[in-house]
Amino acid sequence: MNTQSYQPVALIIGASRGLGLGLTKRFLERDWQVIATEREGSVRPELRNLAATDPRLSVETVDMDSDASLQALRDRLSKRSLDLVMVNAGTLGDPDAPFVQRLLAVMRTNVAGAMSAVRYFSTQVRAGGVVAVMSSELASITDNTKGRWEPYRSSKSALNQSLRSFAAEMPDALWSLTAVAPGWVRTDMGGPDAILDIETSTRGVTNMLMTHFNQRGIAFLNYQGKTLNW
Ligand SMILES: NC(=O)c1ccc[n+]([C@@H]2O[C@H](COP(=O)([O-])OP(=O)(O)OC[C@H]3O[C@@H](n4cnc5c(N)ncnc54)[C@H](OP(=O)(O)O)[C@@H]3O)[C@@H](O)[C@H]2O)c1
Image (cartoon, rainbow, N blue to C red):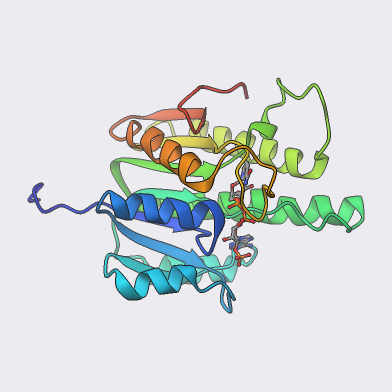
């Protein structure tokens, strides 16, 4: 491998808007190649517009709620070696839906979809690479003294738990696993009152992830690199 011309590759799942789009921009700024995904029929053109002017960016489609869709993406990318997989896609669920419906919906996307993506794409991550999921500070069971956001919190706690099981069952894995808490960010999900802008959060997340290459093990970290309570 000629290290001088080596251009690392990131797969960012859920990049049509918000933090995923921000992370895509941050890795392009670092001169990475980025494979970024949106859902089929996405009405948000930003990612595709960026790809039209930047050959380092390619856009794929996947819906994490569909195993067939995840498998199809895995098949399309089967020849690619990845340095980073970031499973960013997530949902708060429909606030007007009944409790059980909302809980099942967030579990479907934030846990089943996200962990399927981890299982499918981590096999393509090179030794020394990074596998990351977008978790949340709300995932912490230890720090949950105030309640609220029960379905969403539960899904992110379950995501962290699932990631820890995955790590424990793969002690010989040659990449590191990271559950990321991006802070409270002004996106469609975070809303206008959130304290961070997308650039601050994604710059912090990117800097933090860069310190995890050529390491092993699992960590739960915020966008400033601070270790959080599980
Ligand atoms: N914003 C915050 O304050 C905050 C705080 C903590 C954690 N997070 C986490 O950070 C991640 C990104 O959040 P965000 O604020 O950027 O949210 P967002 O603005 O609502 O964007 C969510 C992204 O996920 C994609 N997505 C949702 N469901 C999907 C599915 N089933 N399959 C594929 N893609 C799907 C969306 O695609 P479409 O455009 O097609 O809907 C969109 O690209 C989420 O995991 C979220 O839980 C956010």
